[in-house]
Length: 608
Ligand SMILES: O[C@H]1[C@H](O)[C@@H](O)[C@H](O)[C@@H](O)[C@H]1O
Image 1 (cartoon, helix red, strand yellow):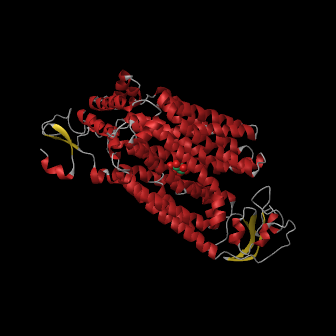
Image 2 (image 1 turned 90 degrees about the vertical axis):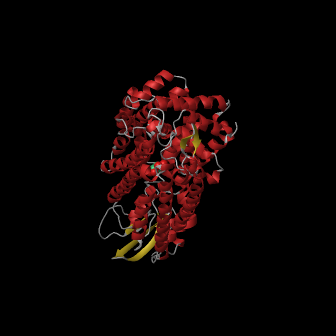
Image 3 (image 1 turned 60 degrees about the vertical axis):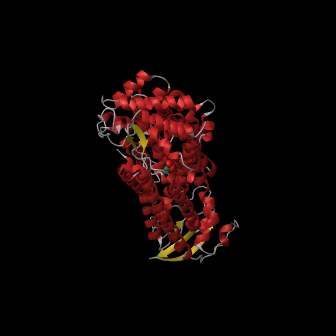
């Protein structure tokens, strides 16, 4: 397949006269101008479609978020060891990775609508199994099933929304899916908080409740239509026309319909056979799009969002929140912050564009990570010393540590101390109980009964007077991450591939997201043990700087362009794709002496 394909396609787009930036003089509105979006108002039906699809995002957020609170109860009730706990959490993410990767094939074969129906059916079945699970093995099966639903939904929903949205609002509508993801995480943390008071069977409600949005989505999608682009690709043109007209509120859809059809016909003529992924890799523009899409998803996870979210409870404990229940509610405040700032992203995406939003977000995320790292560094440097050395009959490694910093980095030990105002005294480093990390295996802190005179048990954190720096870093991190790096990788991926490569491209990039999600969360504690906490956060800062360079060089602006036009942004070499941003160098077509013409700065004077 040659690079001519892009330029030929561009010609096809021109022939359909759908990329013109304004009605050429003398042309009637029906054949000139940005025909596809003559009317910038969005029919209500598109919002209905976006809402019901984004319930998939909600379930993605809910099912990944709810497990942390549920685990606190299940591990006691089912007597789970560390291995089982890790298995129950990461099996879902692992299954999501596999399902996302195979979702590309399913999407191309069955269509977006059937895939969404399938995902909601899987979510419902998973929710029922989890809510009723009699033992840990059935519970594990339920978690894997839910993971399959998350994987399919995570790659299908953004594609479906992008394909039904009018181009001027596509970014905003796809970003709503990310808003639903963070919304799902927030609601999950509130549900965790509410049911944490129900120590027996509370987890059944936490997990079982996910059936409600899943069934709602399933019922909704029985009545909602298939993506018109997929229908056209499958040759079901009558249906495609009907659906397009329905979702455009009965307006004239001739230009948009013809543009999509011309594009698909061109693609079919030129695409050739063979595996889609091989075709993507052989053809320059799609290969570059795939690298950029996967790179964005990888950097999203490497910037440490899930570590920060997961670790927020500990950060809050460092800041002086000692009560478990209070920590659960404050963790809900963390996910609320993530959610609220995603709203800012929805608002900004069509105002400043994807590229600027991502760059700004990465810059702020990097600075906040530096602040977090500095906070941890100051805390480590001022870490309280171990002053008591009780006789350790178990001969554990804990007796070797001279300060809280080293003691808490060893997962087998915890710090037991008394405090007077901010002064720490009578401090020892002792082994943690095998049964629960809430107390020591022996000695002063092994007593579970709460009393004012009891010493304080700190597992995984140290008392510090610099906790406010860490707390500020945490809040700033979420405020910068949530509007840009949270949603943009999903939004950009939904629009950068041509139709023939869209399902496979999204499947690969969503797969990359889930694989790095597992990698980062599973390695965090080991990385922290090896590099200390501040080392780990400095490392994330370094990765964010790499992400910044990648985005600056490679990510073009896709705002406002018709899906069929976007492929042309990837005609240049990878590292210069970033220069084809719409703000700087938008693809613009104007009518010059009777034929369509690609406008460049030097040509501007030739315009009729
Ligand atoms: O875009 C989402 C979102 O930002 C979530 O908060 C995060 O947990 C996911 O991993 C990410 O993919």
